[in-house]
Length: 464
Ligand code: ARG
Image 1 (cartoon, helix red, strand yellow):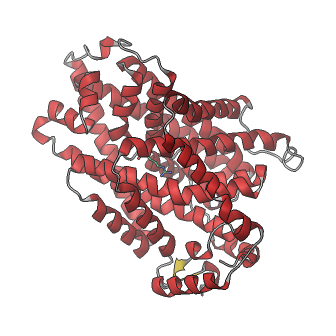
Image 2: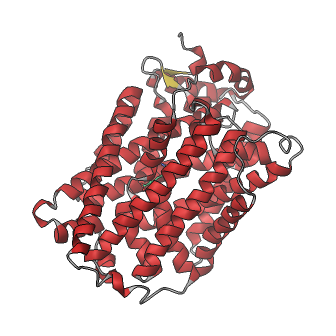
Image 3: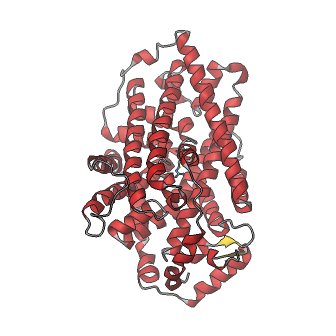
C-alpha cells in the first residue's frame, strides 16, 4: 500500500492499456452486462410495485428511459474525461478525491460482491440446486486462469441469453396470435398509488437495466471513443429496452398479476404454460445467462480496482496481477469471499434494494458532476466531442433523488441507515491512509504475505 508511489506509476501503467474495443464489442459490452439476471427475477418486484399490467409495462419503459438518459450523460463525461474507471474518474474531476474514494470503497466492498450475490441467487432460484457457491468459485477460477477464457465465456453466454429472450418473445407472439390477450387487456386495473412502493418496484427494474455505464469503465481502451461511446449507447440502450418490453408482454400473455407474483421463477412458470414439453430449457438458459452476467461483472470491475489503486485510493495489493496469467487474482479472491458472505442471508429482494439505494446516490452525484463541469473554470471551455442537452443530467439527478429518497419515506428501514453509515464510514480509512498517506510498516508484511500466497505483483514490475 505504497501511496506515495502511486502517482509515479501513472504514465507507465497508461501505456499498457491497449485500444481494442470498437463499436460492436463496445455495444456488446453494454448489452451483455445489462442483460443478466434481471429480466428473469425483476418482473416480480416491479409488478409488485406497480400493481397492474399497464403500470408494470410503463415502468419497464420508464426504467429504460432513465437508463438511457443516464448513459447519455455518461457519454458526455466519458468523452470529456478519458480516464478509465467510470464514476470514479468523473467524481474526482468534479468534486475531488473524497467522493471518488468513497465510490471506490463502496463499489468494492458493497456493489460488486452484492451484485455477484444477486446474480448467483437468481441462478439458484432457477436451477433449484445449491450450485451457486460452486458457480462463484468456478468463475473466479476462470477469471484468475485467463483473460482469454473469461472473454470467450462471455461470448458464449451472451448468445445463450439472447436465445432465451428470443424463445420467450416468439412464444409470446404465438400466444397473442392465438388470442391470449385477456390479461394484457386488464390494463391499469389495480394500479399502485404509493410512491415509495412504486420506487421499490422501479429498483427492481433498474437492477435489470444496470450495467448501462459499463463501457465508461474501459474508456481508455475504446477505439475513437468520442464516436463509438455515444453510438454504442444509442444502439445498446433502446435495444435492451425493446427486448425487455417484449419479454414482459410475453409473460403477461399467460400470467396474470397475482400468478406472476406467486411465481418464484417467472420464466419457468411461463415455460410450463407455453412450452410444457421443453420447459426444462428455460432454467438451463437462465443459468447460462446469469453465469455470463457474473463473469462480465467480475471481468470489468477489475478496471476500477486498478485505477483506484493507481491513484492511491486502495491497497496496492488489490491492483496486483498474477505474475504469469496477468489476471487480477488478489482482488478477484477478495470479491469472491465477500460475495459468499452476502449470499448467506439469501434474500434477493433486500440485496436489490440496498444495491440500488447505494448505486443511485452515486449515479446522482455523477449526473451532478456533468452539470458542475459545464461551469467549472478548468473544464467549461474544454471542447466536448459529445454534448448532451443540460436538461438530461438534470432529469437524471431528479430521478436519482426520487429513487434514493422515496423508499426511505415509504418504509424507513434501519438497513438504509446502515448502508449510508457504511458508505461514509469509508472516511475513517481515508483520513489516515489516503489523505495523510500514513504507512505503517505492518501493511508491508501483510502485502508481501498475500503477494507470495497469490504469486502476484504490481503491473509495472512485469517484464514485457
Ligand atoms: N442488469 C444486470 C442483471 O440483470 C445486473 C448488472 C449488475 N451491474 C454491474 N455493473 N455488473 O443481472
